[in-house]
Length: 296
Image (cartoon, rainbow, N blue to C red; front, side, top):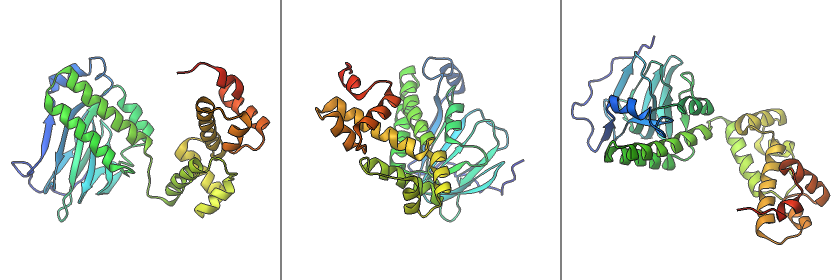
């Protein structure tokens, strides 16, 4: 049971400059049976600037996920996992079928972009994002891109309710949900350290690197850093580095006439024979055979 304080009365005429669209529920049910939108459909969306007195309490769950992006001010949300403060630069993802509540801060009301989504692909997105009632709020690493996609969603939803417009809105929403699922940004030191380490590996492909050295740069123990890295990327450090090196090697083999030894050296393998063995482990063919294949 969610217990929330009494919310102030909502502004009867909405918020100056607001945009909002609600798809009729019979049309939602139809869209969920149609190709494309059956996978993901936007049912509601909007933009509320400086939303004083904004708030919702849903003790009876709804079948859509609620996505709220706070761009200014602050607010809060509450689920069965507790009460959470929401600040500018953060997103709330509330799974379907769960009671929840949210509202603007009384002293510094939030500005928010939001949408409700449903469809066959939704559970997989939420699982990939790790969003649950116990962890509904997270930081956004690129809020501008997320807001741009929400703007596109609203544009298509406001245009009309044809299959073409709903499919275009669904495409922008699918992109947005994919970014949220891949953006596992956290405020903890380990998460920031891993982001910095992956960027370092991408820009230093040709240099010898050790897990202990990366951990020391992050001022974390080797074991803690390695565990954080695998949790965040899905790969051990050196396997992740190998993938980056092999991607660059493929590019050089496809676009230059460099020798195999030169390519190997460029991506951090002084021993071209060892490089060829690693390349074959990843691709199933040697670098020379790969170069001869017809691609594109």
